[in-house]
Image: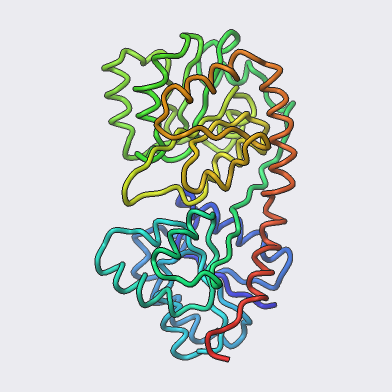
Amino acid sequence: MKILFISRAYPPVTGGIENQNYALSVWLPKISDCHTLANTHGKKFLPFFLPYAIIYTLIQASKYDAILLGDGVLAALGFIVKIFYPKKKIISIVHGLDLTYQNAFYQNAWVKIFLPSLDNYIAVSQETKTIALQQGLLNDKVYVIPNGTDLSYTPDKYTRQDLTNLLKKDTSQSIVLLTTGRLAKRKGAHWFIREILPTLPPHIFYVLAGDGPERETIEKALKELSLESRVILLGRVSDQDRDLLLHTADIFIQPNIPVPGDMEGFGIAVIEAALLGRPVIASELEGLKDAIIPNENGLLVPPLDTEAWRQAILELSQSQEKRLLMSQKAHSYTQNTFHWQRVSELYIEALENTKTQVQ
């Protein structure tokens, strides 16, 4: 099968969709004849990329068996191509926010006209599929395929001293909690710092690797609560430092909270942490419920439940044996379930099984 994969969100910009689209562009060609057309210049270049991608696709579409769109924003492109190639298979990945974006024009055009004109959709989680159905997409046209990961698991590569050197803080007698990724409100870091961290023993401290709109709010909370010594805001980190953190922190947490108009489509950070052997505690919310399977690769805790979060962290922090067992099981399960090799195979199956609306 010859596939044209189109991505408007792609590195060097960082983010969940960008990382997922990049991984697909790497793994799909390993098992199929796949060409990627990607916007590598960020959001500012999008007004130029979209017309170019439309023209390119209209000229080249006949060479491909299927066109895969990296997210729902590209449905406008698919709508136009369908006018000229009604029998061409066009499938869009949907992540969540591309379905719920609160803009009347977007909802009326993209969600009600452009997306329904396509043949099938690949939702990155059951929660995303639920949203898609609520928005009017048909149940039998929505596949659910999780995001994947392929980080290298090298447990002996880094030591606790490496973590101490990176954080510039002695970690030998501490429990290090870690969250990676964008500091967005839905990620719940601000809530966790205000509601949970002050109730935990002082030898437990929290590391955040990432940046985003919530940073200023978090910094304000740290000053108000005098928690500067127990929270380390690293900002954006290099891939190497992120790798070090994911191999050496004691517990990975993702304390997401419900935020109207925003959602966690899947939760790639938690499966990356699980693959690298981190015990994971995450909110039982939205796409995280697809990424974390309780007692397989982590624990799910009700969002905003302060006592449940406190108890989950205390139980793990007090037992190195429990953390080790969870670590080993999480790595094995995640490797077998969420590796990009397997996920890419599911994409090919979905594309092959797609039938066009015009036969």
